[in-house]
Amino acid sequence: MADKGVKQARLTEQVWQALGGNRVEQRWVADKHGVEGLAFGHTIIVSPLPLVPVIIHEALHRAHPRWSEDTVQRHTTYLYSRMSDDECHRLYDAYAAKVVYISKPISAE
Image 1 (tube, rainbow, N blue to C red):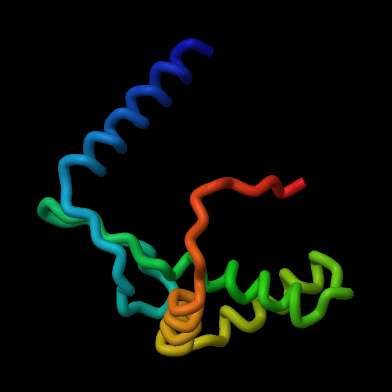
Image 2: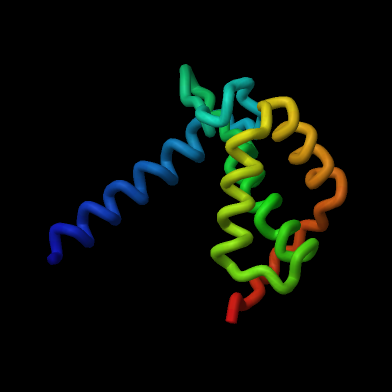
């Protein structure tokens, strides 16, 4: 068990070092829903793509408050899997233009 804690600590430290020692960019990676990030040279690129299904999911909750979680998830998967990269990008841009960043966490309970 102690080995798992050591391994976790070592990997976590490596992540922090890589994050601190490299240029970090958030930008869209033009791809059909596959590439969520890239790392090359001294640059780490993180795509906002993984947020798109979350945006869809939570928007469907608001559009259909009576739907069950399973129904919302099925419709999220259905819609996301049929969206083009351009549609995903446009949805993210609309989200980014509207989002308010709040650093204080909120409980999910």
